[in-house]
Length: 335
Image 1 (cartoon, rainbow, N blue to C red):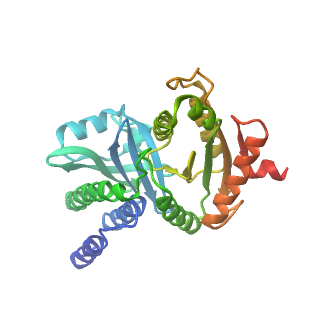
Image 2: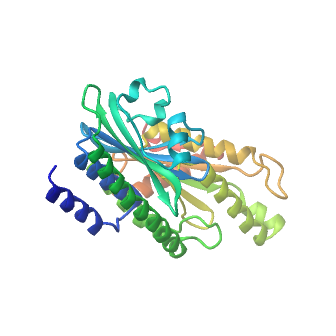
Image 3: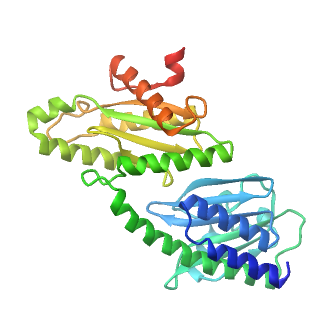
């Protein structure tokens, strides 16, 4: 790629540095990196609480995949983050330092280049570019270009983190510290549009606390509020970093699960149900606090935000009618 085209691509990336979402920014970063470095795939991995958040992209399947990998990393990643210097390999598939989590899903990896993402000289992740098996390794000029993109990405990601922190103050429910209903509507519109563009499924889970009124009557509304906050924390701890937990109503919550089909959403919903029923809450015997959950899927059950909310709400109330402390889906209602 000529110098003028490189400069144009970098300028376009910088001019669009304020994305609508983290996923959109990562999508743009990976696509630009593949084009600039003449790669076949790319990945970005970022430290996020107890796990690594990893987004991957390759030319033949231009739908970015959002993944999570454990905090335990390969020797290649440890060396990269410890030294703070780029690491390249002529054949990633045969490199004993690498693990499956270092590769690009759907791509038979050959040459690869990994560049650390740094903030204040501290690595917090990496940008990787891949070529298919049999292609030439990345040249020193190409590696320098990848390092330039990684430097931009480091700054942009830190700016995004700050922006997200400030924005979250305006869209967070004061009591539970998860997203509020206003943000839920905005996020659901955005994720439905994104899922439709990439022909992906998206699931919505509606959650209602069973018998909260009885708990409030026995212990007071202040205790009930603290219980809701504790529940919100349990939900947030048991979803992926790119899933979204939001407060819907007085004692209702919602989960937005991108790239998740009905089966996957039911697994998540059942995990939430089990976590709550086995948790010991203050002033309540274990198992006395439960939740009912309803699952709806885009585009099978609805193609717009309100339709999806209504579908998951119907499934939720079916769960309440059928005994509570259970998961129901729209498909089961139609059966």
